[in-house]
Image (cartoon, rainbow, N blue to C red):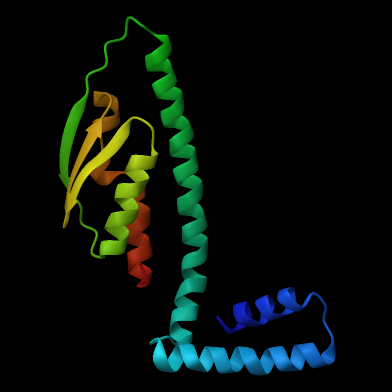
Length: 156
């Protein structure tokens, strides 16, 4: 977070001089100390975020790929009038521990075309799927695997 404060200071100033850099170092240190003291922040949290960043980038990439695949499948349903969709409401229980990870999973399911998270209560999910193909493997999807790995790092 210290580095983020310093980079923002330099960006907002628009140029780098020795005075701007020194003042930025002091202000960034003061802001970082404030965050550590009053916002329960620590250097450990920074290190966890740095370890989590590649996983988060991978998660977003997988989400985009899954959205594109689901768009293709929904387009197939629309353009094939003889195909009869079989909508389902699927109930599954997630093994995710944190509320944040469960909310990210619910939002990822909703962002993917053809599926909508109808309800999330604790570890219980109810998902409406446009077709039975979308309902297969929700409880053990790539989203769940990646979120479990992110939880193992300990920040999510």
